[in-house]
Amino acid sequence: MSTLAADRARLADLDAQILDLERSLSALRSQRQPVFERLSTYTYPVLTLPNEITTEIFIHFLPNYPSWPPLTGPDSPTLLAQICREWRGIALVTPALWRAISLSDPRIPFEHQVHLCNLWLSRSRCSPLSLELCGLTIDPLRTTELVSALVSHRPRWERLVVYDFSLSRLLAMDGPMPLLRTLELYTDDRHNGVSFLEAPLLRTVVLWDAATETVALPWAQLTSLTLSHVSPQYCAPILRQTSNLVHCVLDFRDYPEAADLLDVTLPYLHSLTLDGSNPEEYLETFIVPALRNLQILNAYLEPGYIPTLTAFVTKSGCKLQNLRLQYADSAFEFYFRKAFPSTPVSFE
Image (cartoon, rainbow, N blue to C red):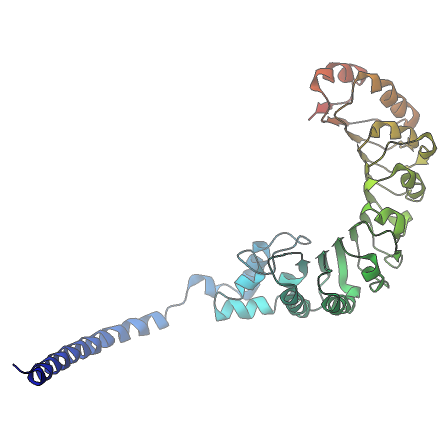
């Protein structure tokens, strides 16, 4: 058979196969149509829930406010907006899903973080905001743009946590913060001062390193204060202004000197945690009649420090309900329990 005749025969065979396949496809389409129509009338049970219940489920899907969900990924509210049209509509009109914003993921390009931040700020509407800013120094121009966007929503700030962020940037944030309740600053910038004095609801503050030296705060209204990696010389002047403290954590980076041990009376202090270099020596500073919980983190704590502890309790006239000695050698537990027979003593 010639090549031409073979090609004609092959073409006829292929046409016949195509015709058979088209008939099969037509039959499958005919079978598919009623199945599709039945499915189109089916409503998934979850989509029959009232929007109010779906909204509550969405809110419980996220970390408890004021903790922050990731901007993207499985635990982000953006996932809820990608499941189906109905869920997207509910997610986009639920401000509570977008009110906790963390700009701290190095895997997301900074420019995209700025874009997402603006989206979340818009979607959160009038809700109070919980903000986490971390190391936003890559692009000064975009950082300025971001700070401007955040400042425009400053009346809604409820929690503000800032890591490795130049205090000069924070200067642009200065102003009234009527809802701010929690402030955490982690910085080693000693060249700029910043004020948070216009925050009438501020109660909880965490300051790290240089922030203790450069930040002006309404100290008298605070009820919880953490000073971390701080020199003891800066503690007493601050603590003498915080007469309403209920909880206090001090983490020293240097040994306390005699000049640092100025008397501080904290009449409402309920819990005190001391960490760092020989922190128990700083106990001489305090008069805390309401103290109930004392925690000391010191791997070198030994029975020789018992007189210091007993003198502190006697001086304050407090009735300890819990004494925790973390990192201390449990071999000394007997001596501390004997010295404080009416106080539960724990070693960790």
